[in-house]
Length: 220
Image (cartoon, helix red, strand yellow):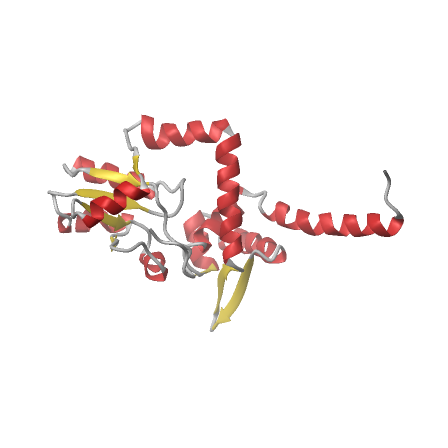
């Protein structure tokens, strides 16, 4: 059944606005930028370093995300600090991860091969992690950058950024399991940390929990 002209104009306008968000999410680099911003507000230079892009390219991606109202920018002196426009953007990213993980088999295979089959890096689940921290048999380490830890972290977590782990590894007890966590389901830093720790003789595991959204997301 066809629409009258006014209704069709309305529908076209609605779907054009929805498509703006869809187009903003259609870039792998922009998705990574959004993931970085779930952890802490950042300058364009900091974001560019994290996603391994030039500042010019990163600025262009941020502009598209701003146009879709997914991020905001606030000037702080000579810099603009970018952040997500709301916690609903985090929920959108979580939903995207869930849908892709459920329906794209190649993604599941890729993650399994990287995290589990290659080196046996099975993750410690949420409830087991809580129990082991409470009974003193595990230590939880946060291997994200300090700025992200300071913006929000899981309870009882000790901050040891992945690029500082080797220098501080002797701080960790050898008689407890070391459980590492980082950003999200596809963050590789925790796997890298586990490999380093196991090479030094530690009983180390990844956690299947992620860092909370910096404005105060759920914590275990």
